[in-house]
Image (spheres, one colour):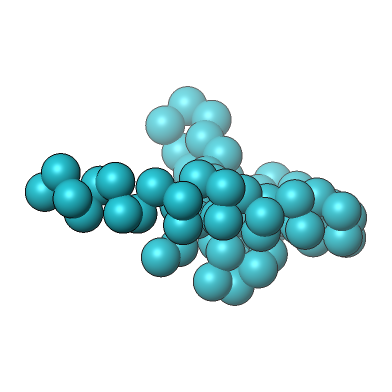
Length: 67
């Protein structure tokens, strides 16, 4: 299970947080700068990694039962 949080502007993906990597990855020049800035904040990364457990792991059983 992977938690992904993407940031878009004008339908272009600028940056994405991936819980499997544990950091942000930029896709545009601006996105690379933002990813570097966000990756320097350890508290932000820890909070996003915790969201994987909050949103994904607690609900995986619910979704698989309904399928």
